[in-house]
Amino acid sequence: MIDTRHLLAGLNAMSRAHTADYFSDGHRAGAVISASYLCRDMAVEDGVAEILEDRMAREWLSTPLFAPLPDEQADPSLIDRIVATMADNVDGVRQAGHNVILPSLALKALRDVPEAVTPGRVAGICRLVEAFERSDVPLGPAVDLPSSDDPVRFAESVLGEFTASTERFIGRGQGWSGHLLTYGAALTDLHDLGHHALARRAEDGFHQYLRRIRLGPLDSDTPRPEHDPLQWLPLERAYWEHKSGGDWNLGHVLKYPYGFYRLLALTEDAGLRQRALTAAFRVF
Figure 1 (cartoon, one colour):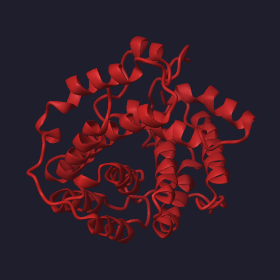
Figure 2 (figure 1 turned 60 degrees about the vertical axis):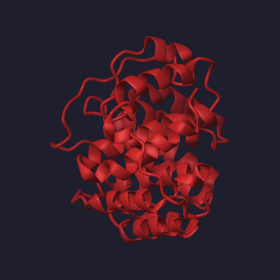
Figure 3 (figure 1 turned 90 degrees about the vertical axis):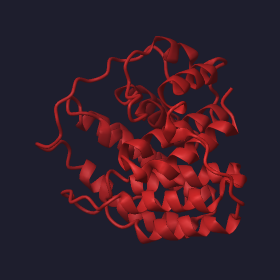
């Protein structure tokens, strides 16, 4: 069963990611944390957690990236260092928002595994945040979105943009659409964790990300085949039993569902929920 051991393993990997391939290793760390919360917080069917635990064990958990770290004394005040580092590196679009997406997952895990708030882990997570550089992306007109202070309206606006984005990028890859989910969920998580000022400060970069998405595909967006419509969705055991492929290398197969269902759980508009569920196969 997925439990706090997996959160701790994800945090270990998150703190090591900067030492090698910060982007790919940070993704894998975030995928394990995302899977933990998908199974803990969402209404997954019986057997889903066991399937994911087995696959993560085979793919990642036995690798040095996820190995235990030396014992250190925990210091809850060190959370402030991560928040301050994020605030110093939150402007602009930084590699599809991973400067916010990944450390927000780490902060959520550290809330639930407070003994993991150690100097070594915190220093590594801060180094990871600093590794993400601003991306020079074209931007469309300014956007007017509800503030992330209002979680329901914000989640509904993100899911509305998501459904439009999946149509816009048909045949050109859905990475922009998928990361819209994880980026939006990250801002929501920051508010839930009490980091309201940081979440509001991160909104500018999120808006810039959305301004890029609204331009649609550019020449740099490589044509990619679309996913086939799905008979099942990630909360169902059959999805994981029958799904082949998926991006287990970077863990999008786990991070996108977490972001999607995190936002969907807040949505009160039944019509929007159905439209989002109908479009979801494009990223799942």
